[in-house]
Figure 1: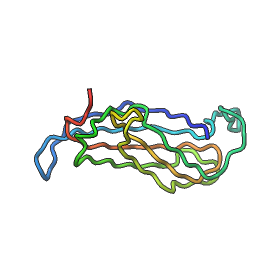
Figure 2: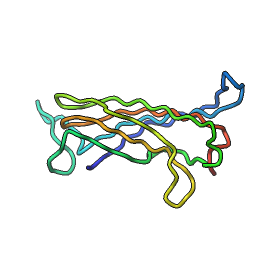
Figure 3: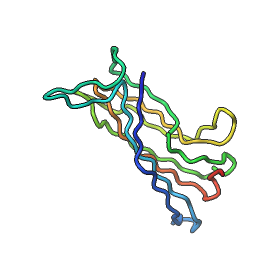
Length: 143
């Protein structure tokens, strides 16, 4: 399954935790995932831009968020990730079946990155918009 991820500028702010009064780093990752080729208007129809082939309605994609900050695994205690996803383009029908984000270690062992798993049902074209909010200690950022 071929995917193309378009990211928006990352928003990174310092906030105060209402319960503890501690400073937290709030980072928003926003983007669109095109699955099995992006769509392009061609007169009165949509044209597929991407590899030719047959697509299936079930879409299971998993990837490291391209603009993810590097996180220190030892500083992620109490970190929170929230994710929302919506079908942005789905042909005649579509639904998000599941969306989850997690901190996943780099294959080399360090650092950890934000990783997104999406499961959807959609005809072509299929574009999924996502928004991930990471709430971490300021010291959780590596480098």
